[in-house]
Image (cartoon, rainbow, N blue to C red; front, side):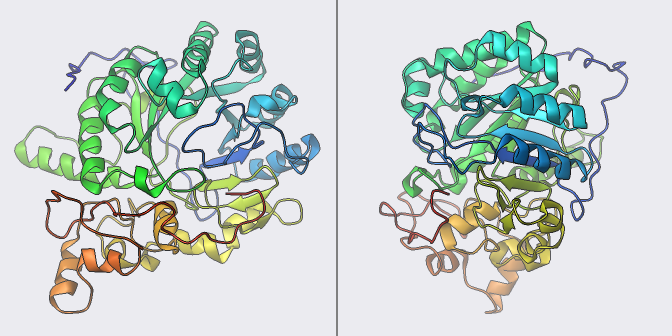
Length: 442
């Protein structure tokens, strides 16, 4: 296990060093904190877990430049959400610089997640920085070229990705690394931590696999394995020179609070518990920021390359389309979004959980595995006392029975330990029935 000693952290850029910048305060009923637009599904990589099931060529039905600008104008009416251009690979669009410049001129905080390919040159990064890009986020899924390139499906992606980070540092552009945790990558986590420690990033976003797109059920880690990664993330956050957050695993917030409550009881922590860890200031220093409690459809909005509006890219249930409906009204008023923002509608142990307003479980993973976005997230070890009492009274099913009745192939792994906790499902390939999807969408 890698040990990162706690360090004296340097004052954040633009701060006096006396206090960290404040977190974004957003009423999620009215506005999202984060809006992601899938600019295209075209990409020159062939990632094994690709949510978008990307392909080399662009779709003729993508939003045009004019339609994209109209979308950004409506998003600006929410306030100043973080507006991230993703894909596929946004660098496949020739209007990329024009779109970043337009969004920045509107006052949006602009982020970009390009693919690790030769399309993103140092010259392009410098130009994007000059027109107002706030942060560049890249994906690194293995600590060596062989591991990362094997995951991404193209030799050379590792070196191109590190080159993008270097070019961004040279022009003073804030950076972020996204890393996917799956059964393929679990054993690489410590080596990944060592790698990202030296990259000068603001944020390490640790993605926990959701079986959508090309991602397979068999690649899911177990709930216990996820919990162990959470523990390491929390331990690392005390010393590394960047912020660490989870994506598609809001239960990390629950674990953070549990650890902090324990530390207060032991006398090693004086501050009140918070679902954000010590390094959050690094995410705040470039103006991109963080917000508490973001989840699918709750502070989060995703627009596909064809304009379909989803709660997130991993939860591809369309509420409407920006070409003929108002994205603001869809987010605020559509019944699906409203239900996802109401923790009292959650089912199973998520619905009984004392952390449901802070965590809420991954709604995308619940849908991918059960077909119901309000169901319990199976990749969480926590079993609320309230739920156990319901089981004892005969008002609810024991956890394993509950998931077995909702997830085809659910079963206990060999060597499973904790009583009543959620285990990895034992699933054949494509165990969950294919659901109807919009043609070309995932």
